[in-house]
Image 1 (cartoon, rainbow, N blue to C red):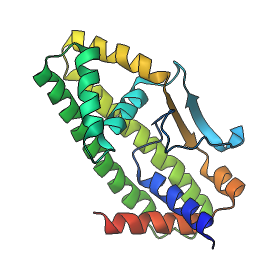
Image 2: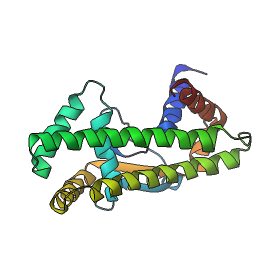
Image 3: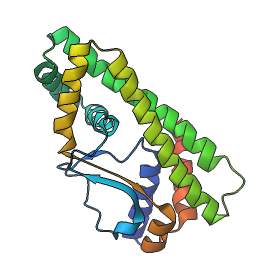
Image 4: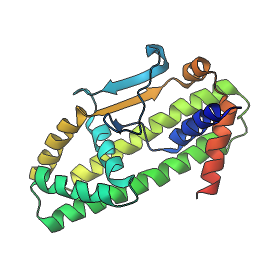
Length: 206
């Protein structure tokens, strides 16, 4: 297997372990997928149809995926502006975003281990495809719960301000869920190798 093929396997495997596919469209690390429409079960691209919880997921990811802390600092400034919060309240909002994303990541990794890795049906590709589809739905539901909890814990005026902010984020965010049987058939990747790589990553990063 050449370098690019190995890289593609690693990227696909790592995506399986992530909480979801909500990404800022301007992110330089995200390549636009040029794929036929039928490989997507759902797809949102920069429009108001994106559910609020997926915009909130993008917000959590933007805050948490930068180990240097620069993203958290930028989010602190945005929270102060969009939610009209005092510095201490804005700081607490950012801390909650990071904590929620950590909780989401941990719960989704456990779901991946349980549904994908710790099973005796890994050799049945159709079952694996169905379980990968189900895993995406589990991730979606988990993100919705995090958003619902965040809204429930906010003052009504702050909740309204957050939803106005999320409405702006929708136009900057893409999200998709794949039909895994079709995507693996289209890309000719080995689902066994991808799943093995994802499960090995999870085993090494408990």
